[in-house]
Amino acid sequence: MSLYSLVKGRRGESGFGYASTAEEVTNGLDLKGKTILITGVNSGLGQESARVLSMRGARIVAAARSREKAAEACRGFSGDSIPVACELSDPASVRACVATVKELGIPLDVLLCNAGIMALPNRELCHGQEMQFFTNHVGHFILVTGLLDQLSDTARVVILSSGAHTMAPSAGIQFDDLTFNTGYKPWVAYGQSKLANLLFARSLARRFAGTGRTANAVHPGVIATNLGRHMGLVARIVSPIASAVAMKNVHEGAATQCYVASHPSLAGVSGEYFADCNVAKSSRHSQDAAMGDRLWKVTEEIVAKL
Image 1 (cartoon, rainbow, N blue to C red):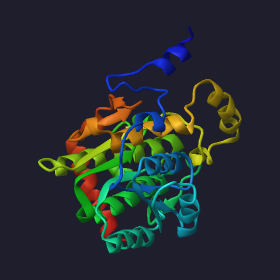
Image 2: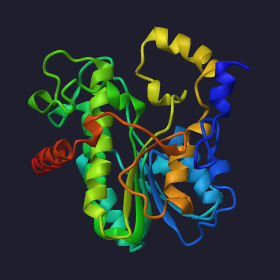
Image 3: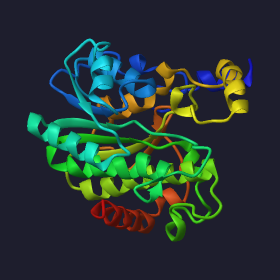
């Protein structure tokens, strides 16, 4: 048996593993009466997560860059869904999304922060911040903190991080040069944004302590989706080959976030990092509560100026 076959077949304590699919990890669950907000529902992991969770009975608040894209995605879901616009790189759009959800008056049982961008080849700024950091972290920070009062008593916040959080700068969050004014590297900047996602999830978990609410981060795996649309020519050529050999498909990639968002066994589990539907190890920086607290404060300062 090949190493690849062994990895694909491996399962952890949860009973699920690398090759488990979103449908498998939610099999038998009845999510009727649950409302789940998912960002990035119009493609990739967000679309598959929304499809499967909707199939299990959940109402989906479907967020995409435009309401039109969200509405188009909703046509592929079997259950009740509500399209909303949420362009994470546009604070006005995120705040409008928050206002729209509050107007609905529906408590959120899950807030799944799925959308993101990856490995921009050139340094780009957004509202004075590095684009990946702003979109992946700051945009979701505005969304989540804006909807805290809308969360149900047992709500779960699930934030997509990545194994790439280990590619962050050696100091962790590069507070002295958040924007990579010097030495921009696409994967290091992406790694910083994913470390920020993980630190944010754990900071939320600390704030939720003593309540029924939870916050966790997940690594979906290496998946061939349009998230890699900014990657170079060589990567685009290699990707189809790697996909056939080692990458997860979208059904497998959406499994971990659907598992953490919905599985009854995780009620009360908070502040963890999941990969392949099991608790996984993360970098020492991701476990640095002081770094997480500083990031929260710095992010609040950034948001206050927008």
